Image (tube, rainbow, N blue to C red; front, side):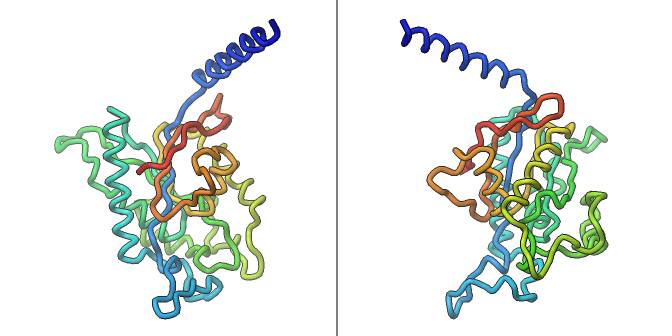
Length: 256
């Protein structure tokens, strides 16, 4: 009787949990790591990794191969989207303020890819915003130091910069680095931010450490056996919330 009773209870708890999840708001969310940039390459002569504390690696742009990766990632994503999310449109692209992520977001989702019609139909172009909430762990490493806000505004006029962003990068320090605990807090703030957004179909272009720490904490099954997040990897799933409060990630999977 005890075994049967336990099985009966587990069945109803399982059904209850799924009923709760079904009633939650679901936002489709896609995380893309930026393409290869200068600081991701080993020295061709010595095969040594670059010294990230070298100022010459300040906010590096994508290299040629990184731009090709971004283009391919965008095409791969759009093919998947059109065949699985029928009639839905990407409403929002969120990018880190570091150049390699902005470039990746612009190349993967190029203006003009989503023309509605030639007679004034409703635009299907996604809104594009830039927030420091999704930047890489910062401090000491020059590739993770962003450019001044006025420079970003000048070069990327179609990108909405977070109003809270200061002119200079006040968070970055040459003597200390953001800890994993601090990064986890920032990730929680970002997920709370997403839960309050009106958009339901969202792409986030960010960084390897940021995405790995996020998934390890909120959906570890997305990275089995210690899998890393490589340049232009694309991970898609659902962000669950209730009354604007973040509840969890569900069904996150790497797009291949």
